[in-house]
Amino acid sequence: MWPNFCFKYSVLRVVVLPEPRQTTATRMVQEMTYRLNIFCFLTLITAFAGPVSVSAQDASQTGAAREAALEVHADVLAPKMLEVADKTRLKAEKTMARSRDAARAIAQYTEATLQYNAARERAIKTAAFLEEALIARNAAVEAQAQSYALGRWEDGYEYFEKAIDALERERDDKALSAAKNATQIFKLAELEAIQNRILAKARAEISAAEKSGAARYAPITFERARSIAQATETALSEDRYAFEHAENLARQAEETARHSVQVADIVRSRPNMEGLILRWEAYFSRAQAAAGLNPPVDQDPDAAADELEETVAGLLTSERQLQKDLANNESFAAALEDEIRDLDEQLSGASAERTELVLTLEEQAREQEQIKQTEDLFRPNQAQVFKQSNTIIVRLMGLRFTSGSAKFSEGNDTLLSKLRQAIQIWPESILVIEGHTDSRGSERLNQRLSQNRAETIMNYVISTMHVPANRISAVGYGENRPIASNENEAGRAKNRRIDLLITP
Image (cartoon, rainbow, N blue to C red; front, side, top):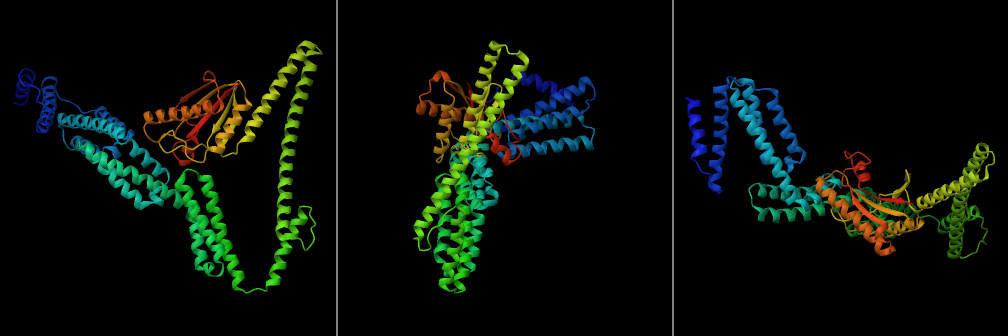
């Protein structure tokens, strides 16, 4: 009976039935037609080709479709469609386990595969529509907002889910409004999380100091600790990625809060004032003696402090310069002497070859000196300098951009100045600016973001140093050239970088 019905229906569907106009009312009819098509197709196969067997391939194809949907984060960007597909897949598994209706199981697996594919397509479209909200969400995740700003994170995620739900219901206007709210709240959550994480210890020390009575017995020192903590919050509000500066301020706030407790303990003990002064003078005199100073006892305290500071600063500067000069001279002399000695032994005094090799060695020594000069410009957390084949690579990890854009964040002036100095060390060289990202977000967005950031650096170099355009170029590699694992925050931080390639 069913094969005969399906045969007649298939002929009628091809020859007679027109395609319905795409309206809300016809979508349900289309869905029923789609299911009936699958049923009839499989029934005809069963009738004419014999019993149908459900192989592992059917389940494997459905599983592969599910993995493809999850790769584009359908669990976040198309959760309802993914849930429907999961239910259909589970039905297919139960059908296989409990009955011999192979045609029905295959139909269910086929339907689940199509649903997973639809969820994948919806997730891709949603990611494009919610690009700014996704960037803000990922930044909040990276800042650990779920731990340090849970309330704001939940508010932002509520709007984020509303935007996704509206898109699944094809309400783009409501989705756009919810996405804007989600973006704003995620950015606030990111900032709050960064502030709370960096200031956690400082706030704990200030609270402990207040409980110990520092606000009463050492009010000046205690208020200074609170002021430094407030300055940390302000600095992060102005540039949330200026971690080094903010962490230094937070550390000062911690230390000042603990110091306020020390001062409070001294004040609370009501010490003899003259004994206290003589005690601190003794500490100061020991520091003066270590610096080679022997001032009179009645020297003005401010003048004594200025003299000690100037002396210590001069000693440190001299020591650094001497160490640098010594290392450079030893390295150059040792390399040159070894190579000349080898040359004398190999060429037995052949002056022409010897002269050529000496020139080559001198050129190599000059290059090593240039590399050393470039290295000395940067602190370890700002850049790494190394040679790869014939190219010098300056790997800039300290440059900061506004989240999700190619616009510089505040606080880059020092590092950009050092970048200009590095380029000046290599005159007439060919320069390539490479942009790299971590694997968060879509590959297409990461590619575009890395290219835009590389071009921002290139345009900065051209405009500030007047480097000819034929000497410099920019290229973005997105997430395709990681130097560390993207499975943890430390690795992702290393992968977000700008590389300057210098070819002498």
